[in-house]
Image (cartoon, rainbow, N blue to C red):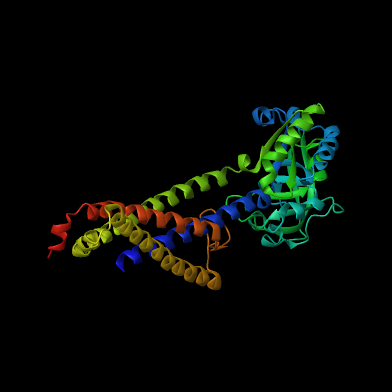
Length: 393
């Protein structure tokens, strides 16, 4: 019973943690693609990664190529949206105080599709971006609070154009929103794409964001577009959401290491519990082993008996663990607890995904693990002398 409980709790721990990190990965992927607005694929002009920050004007996508690239991209059956972007930065002032800002110029009509489910997760207080309102912007509520601005208020942004000339434009705070990240909630502004071009006095864009019908097609579409655009004489750099989301990769690496650590601990517990239990069984059943051998059961048969018992012990422990896992999963699903991760400005729900395929694989693996853990004591039982076993006390 103790061994069964040890295997069961170990199984439940692995299954629950795997379900938790699966939900984390899904959330991080959705946050990278939709929440941060980088899409599944992002297209840059050739050389942007190496020289874009030092000489942005020379390594932006020209206005004449924007429509051509978008048209070619949308001809791919997996591409559902192609949206140009232009990032700007400078100072924003309420007339009394000023502070730095970073803004992304987006096409307002595309923004709801890019955001996906995050459009409701990051609700706008006020009015969303609208192409008909040339001066309307969405401001992160931390920045709005810092400047004492509310929806409907006016402000001014200032900065240098791509030619180095100073420029200043009036803005109207149409709405505020929470970025969900403390480090950006006091700096970000979202502006219409045409407004961003006017601020930098250019017809160019620094990137084109592509949305696909499914994230699994990312690498396929990247290769297809690279070939198609190259044949059309357009040189671009295409980055996937994984390449652009440093946070996703670092968090995934961390959780993979934690999962490996927990799995190794449970692995050792299962081996030791099964080996110890079967070793005691061999000692306690010495006379029974001698009787079976005297009746003609071969050594291989004795080994198989104890190995099968070890496998059954592991399987029963997995079933017990599955019951614990399902109970805890149901409690979490009902209670819907939440927590605030480091760096976040808003709480997130604690979610544990139920993964039938992974659970079935884990049951199979741990049953085999218990079976093989019983082989050493099983072989010891098979090698016992028949006469000595029958007279064992």
